[in-house]
Amino acid sequence: MAKKKENLFFRILLVIFVIIFGLIVASNTAISIKTIINYNHNVLAWKEYSHYGIINDQEDFENLYYGFGTVAKNGCGAVSVYNILCMENKNPDFPKIIREFDFGGENLFGLGGTNPFRIITVLSKNGFKVQFSINKNKFESIAKNCKYAIYLYFGTDNSGIFGHYQLMHNFDGEKFDTINITGKYTYQEITNIQNTFFTMMIGVN
Image 1: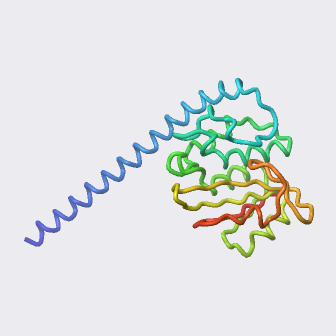
Image 2: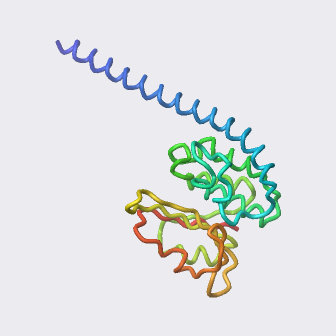
Image 3: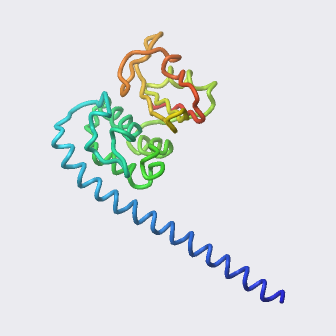
């Protein structure tokens, strides 16, 4: 009887393993296919936009695919990386940047935005020194002492989950220049977002 129970237990474990393995393979296959489809589409769409320089408002780019969503709705992380590369005169190719994130760098296939650690990886690959913290006590110092800073937040309200990557730079002693949302704001105005459950500051030099 004990041996039968043991055999049953291992069979159940094997079935669970096969299911998990199958889900991983299916997920990776879907990501790979979607990445190729998105890139081919975005190359043509980006040419049609004929856009040069920084992106001040991601909502202008509804026709650029990002995971299973769009840049307009979910691409603020990729936009922040693109904008830093623009300001550093690195002539970034936005469809290629999106591809970097499409291939395993997004949350919920892009519908939940971008994984912050992929942003750190992509910026590091492009020659930047990157630091980050989830300790709110360090956020202001990082933002004011780095050439660029990206404030990340996720929160919940009556509409559901919300989030954004806010790029800031050029601190003048009182305010930062910000891009996407573009303007000039104090640190408190940028970071005073209510009902957040996760925040991170990424500093870039």
